[in-house]
Length: 452
Image 1 (cartoon, rainbow, N blue to C red):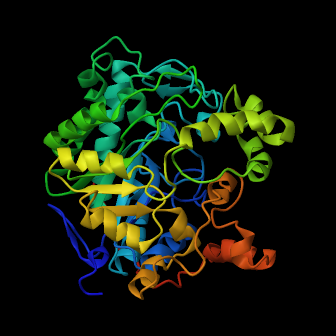
Image 2 (cartoon, rainbow, N blue to C red; image 1 turned 90 degrees about the vertical axis):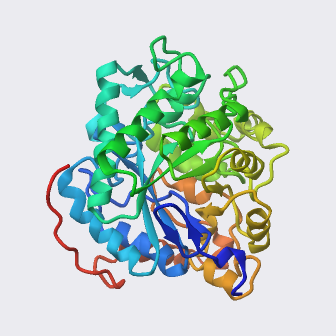
């Protein structure tokens, strides 16, 4: 296996990753209400590092409390959190695995606001509500935009001070950067709206601010949606095309990004992200956690809860999936972007078979792939591939029960068939990360102090 392209190092300008496998951004509500991370998150990340991935991209990490997508996720908005992130980074790095912090801001896509944002409209590029759930928002002022740009720069500085290996800006899947980028969402009339160059200005300003704060030697990549496909509800506009995104990617490269992480869709979840099935039974039991978050959530709940209404949502959701594979759902878009830029490209979207991963890397589609659900199902998937398997012994079924459970329940695999129908064994697996003892070769943190 020495000549297997999957297990050849990936050399970037500021970073070398031991193989071409990235754990994509995913986590559960494992952390404290104030944004400080816990031992549970460290245990979660170490499962994947021990399993053999070359790098882990953290879950979305807000740079401001007002930009939390979900309460119960760790943030990077305070200097005194630096030692906590340092401890996590050291734990992951002890397995010869890189750790990239994904800097994020929810914008209007604030799924579970938590106490800090309760009864307060989220900040966005627009004042129009989010289309699927009806999350309310208001358009950011220029002062708020400038303050948010500075928050991203400080978040990147904190990540560097914590000894992490780099940062990723989450400019995909409907969060704040997407709300500025998308022609279907951004309705501003100032210098941050209108033309594609204006809509890209916020993202490019953040990249420039980060480079000014941390210099050119700290790894910075951008996750971006290749196409918005924003018309999940048929009366909504489609949004940015692949051609527009290619131009944005060229600007991102010129402004100082080291790599691109290619996804698809202008909201999350989206019919094309994550690809796969949709369990009405699961979401009917968990979606009530979001009822107060948006003005259209009760409508959605009725569609999920009652079998006689489910066909409406199924038609809306699955009509956009036609023609797209489950594995490598956006690989054609990744190929087009890679052909247009000179920096490495990571492709995400349901990869699980080693043969397909070899094909897309060797064929010039991308330089690496990122995965979430197949690794949740099989933390040791890289080891199974190295041992000669094409897919895991018990493959992910792409049922999406893991993500549909996330609003209320611990993140993990909920496909009973993978546990031979043994519910207790499934619960034991879900609970395994909650050990409070540091028994995962987690090194003692060095104290980190100072300010940027």
